[in-house]
Every structure is written in C-alpha cells, then in structure tokens.
Length: 253
Image 1 (cartoon, rainbow, N blue to C red):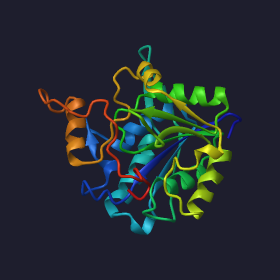
Image 2 (cartoon, helix red, strand yellow):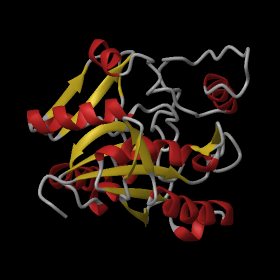
Image 3 (tube, one colour):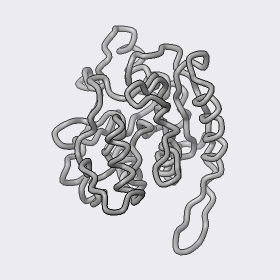
Image 4 (tube, rainbow, N blue to C red):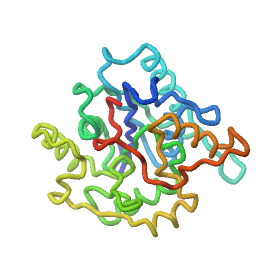
C-alpha cells in the first residue's frame, strides 16, 4: 500500500446479547449499522478492515451478513458537487482468535491486520459518525505525529472512534492483551497520546451525534427516530456519551 495510506478498522461485533441479534446488521433508515460506519470511513481510507469474532462462533446470519456487506462496502460511492464518485476501498474481513475479551482484543487484531500507516478504529454501532470528523481526526493525528488521537466527549475518552498509528499501537495492544489489561485507555501514558476536546469536536460535528451509539434496544429506537424513521418521535440520546459496558464494544460484541 502507498506511503501515508490510511486504514479504516470497524469492530463488527459478535454476540450482541443485549439486543438479541447482530448489531452490525441492524438497520437504520434502511441501511445496516456496519454500512453506515463504513460509509463514514471510506472517503478518508484506502482500505476497510472488518474485525469479527472467530468464524466458528458467528451465527449464520452474521457470517452471511458480513460477507454481503463487505461486497457492498467495496462498491461504495459518494456524491460531491452533484457528481458521483466511486470510492472502491479494499475491504477485508479478519477474525479475532480471542473472543469476548473486549475492545483491546479487537484493537490488537484490527491494527495487526491494517496495512495503512494510520487507522481510524470505530465500533460498528455509531450510526451518525460524521465523515468530516473522521477526515479531521486523521489529519490532526498525522500533523501531530501522534501514536493515538482520541476524542474526549462528555468527559470520557472514546477509544472506539479514534486514530491509531499502526506500527506503534498494534504491538502496544498485543502486549496489553497478553498482560491481561483489558481497558483500552489504561496504558496510554506509554505512547504519544493526544486528545481532542469537546469544544473542537462540536465544531467538527455540529450535530453532536457522532458518538451516539446503539447499545440497547432503546438506543436503536432513538437512533431510528433521529434518522427520521419515526416522525414526531423525540430521541433522548442526541449527543450523549455512549452507554457502553466498562470494556466497551468489541469484536466479540
């Protein structure tokens, strides 16, 4: 891959026990969550890497859905100035051999597979992730030569919506996983970590919806309302901090 290439890494989930079916395939405004996230990443990326649980643990629905979405993401296009542009990012599915260990396992697997110099890592359940935010965070991480650049939203770091230097952070999370430290932000003092504050984030995404995630069924209903599926409904999740588990979303879901 060319020097300076960028990867998009999406943690595609697995069990999704709190919703009852694979989150990656849940639809908002007629589009699966996975594809919505990929569409936000693709304009800034040379490749998209989908990180899933071990293939043997995937339900037939998720296995077939991931393959279908990989084909569709590879044909993504977008419109600018009234003209259609084909993105055609390279798309690969990789399987994390260590299921149910949270986001550190997903980060280690996804960054090991990434072929770009930097990678934007996103959970699959961010339906309103803004492409302009992705582009701006990529540019800032490259400009500051950061090992990791993370948004700080409502007082919390967002490790599943940030930019990582592949050569540094892939081994970092592999070591962290081997040591049994499953909090992705626990050891950032050992690397060149940078933050982006909420005031800056709001200028990059005035809607303040990039960090709204779908963790529970009521989150899904709120996101569908926000996307206009339920006229008159009042979503209560606009701009709030994602209600993740202590480990966050993961390849194992």
